[in-house]
Amino acid sequence: MTPLSDRVVIVALIATVALVFALVFWTVKLHPAQDQPLQWRQGPARLHPGAATI
Image (cartoon, rainbow, N blue to C red; front, side):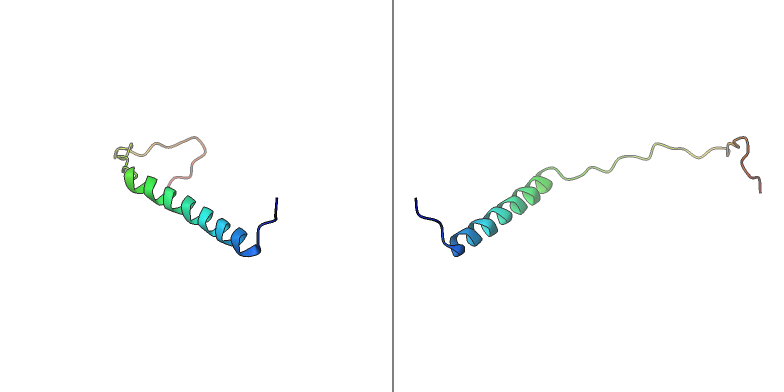
């Protein structure tokens, strides 16, 4: 088996990295992040023991 030339190895590495980035961006585009609703509500402030009062 003959060894691969440097150009072939470099092109293969660049192609692999490009393929990984393309798959990541494609996956993100197909499944965009959904905004989660806020899980808190306005109410009276609770004072914890030892909390400073203003």
